[in-house]
Length: 495
Image 1 (tube, one colour):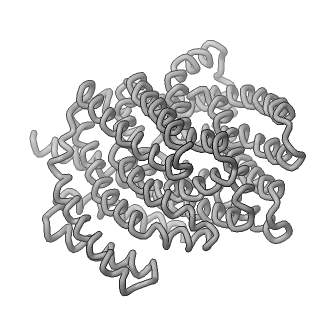
Image 2 (cartoon, rainbow, N blue to C red):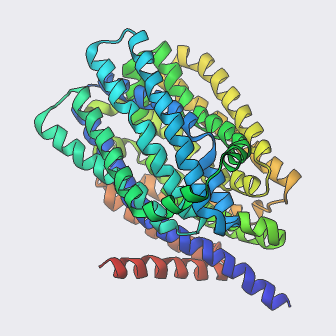
Image 3 (cartoon, rainbow, N blue to C red):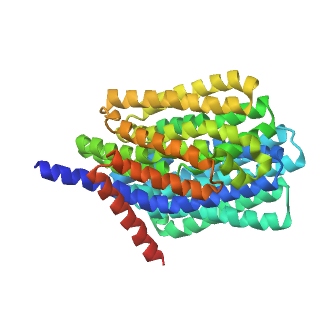
């Protein structure tokens, strides 16, 4: 019996990691396209115009969240639990988004005119507003595929969006430099193209779902989704409120400097995004069938995140200057210190990102929402206090302080309402190996200037140190082996 339980534990962990590996394969590609697009736009625009572009994307992002009504996460959960109703759930989500998105796009026209912007700013905002509709459709289709644990397919959709945005941005750069409208058009065209292709991909399933649709079912889904909407708004505000406060108190140039460094953090979150995306449908299933197996699977994933996230934070902190110069050029030197500070927030996200997934899967979304609201409130207060005094640096410090609070609260909540995570049983050795690697990297910087050489040296040294301090367990090798097989197998299929 014990042997069978152990096999089940490893199997579920392998399932999540294999799915994560496929997701990560495409997310890495998508994030590379995304950071290249950001670097391209940041190099082409002035700091002020890049700040305006980032601010408008933030405002549009808030509006886009409203169009979801929380249906994206609910779609994943419901499809994972009731796969026979998957087409119907997808149709309900798409129909709802079509209506809400159309209303919000019309509202954005009034917002643009009431703001009394220049013609260039107004055109930029209205063009980006079209992504409310197309981006919402992409998210619905990805959520539908995630619910069936076809995570690679869902990730292809999101990666293709970044690919098309980059392609259209390169076209815009060829003909126009330093102008907002061409780059906003390229961004919107990339999202629209990806959305249309994705819709054609699942059109038979969507049409079948529309045949089964009824008003009562749609309203029932919306009612269940509202806690997820509150959570989504809170999470978005948690990450983006700094930009809004900076725009109000310090102007668009400060927004540009902060956004350049924050975009690096976002782009490097592909691994926790892949793991949490893979974990949610599996956790939703296990939460209803085996809480013990859920705990073991979660612990395995958390160990992997710690093994990668803790040394990653060290490298990001020590090489922030080289990363900024490599991506954006010397004129963005002011973004180095904010990135160095926010590196610690990046590390904390690695450690806490799975906890809200488990809470949501266990029907504790309201608890997650309360924690995130506490984080948003903390972030707003800290921003209002720190930004007037320290500008962009103050916004970065607020981000880290808020992440510390969220990490503490999340681990307290999962301990109280689900199970206790024995995090410190494996944290010490991983931290010690990362600390030694960091000391070696500081010394290596004195002799080696090339960033790629430094990263390779750091990764090699850390791998050896993990073995020396015996931080790895036998099951870690099994999980990583399966992940590698999944990635290589997918690569061969695509070749």
